[in-house]
Length: 83
Image 1 (cartoon, rainbow, N blue to C red):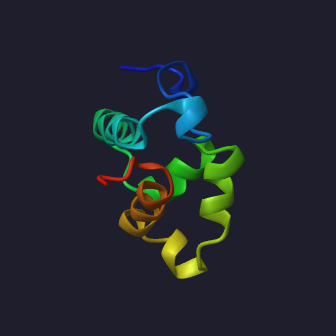
Image 2: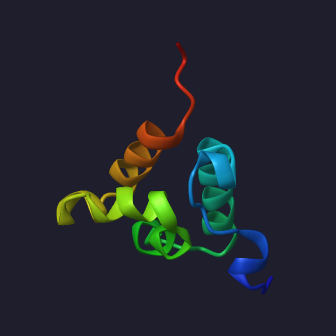
């Protein structure tokens, strides 16, 4: 199956503009599985902008190479607080 990633995965900016970060990350997972993307840590930043890109850029180089750490940082910044 071939498609343009930008047609199915909109850029994530922040929770106000782009909605729920958890759902957005789930969509990244689905696309990665469908398209056999092994390096999600390299794929994901191409779809970040605004505050989300700022969060990513503030990570250490080691954290940027760790997909789970990138996801954790984005969730910490944009997921609704349980309190």
